[in-house]
Amino acid sequence: GLSVDDTAPVARELAELGVDWIGVSGNHCGFGEKLTADFPYFAPYARIVHDALRGAIPLDCAGGIRSAKTANEMLGGGCGSCDLACIGRPFWSDPKFIEAWKR
Image (cartoon, rainbow, N blue to C red):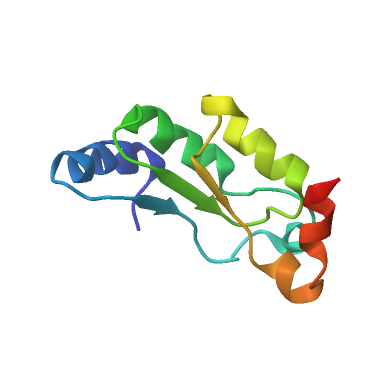
């Protein structure tokens, strides 16, 4: 129920209080056809929180990540939108999804 502007300072406060990890995710409301596309719909929000945390604690992001390319872009060699890109549905729909990561 927080806005993104509210979330960044709350995340910093949680890190200062000793929280080990923060995850950015949400429900599917409002994303329609993007639910099946390779479109990380929470990445912009994760980037704001990630920047606010300044590496104090790890941050993960889930939602709409459907390829290794997108996950790697989100991780961005330390300058991306999160520290861990969470992927679930592609594994459910294709048990050999991990093979794409080996290419």
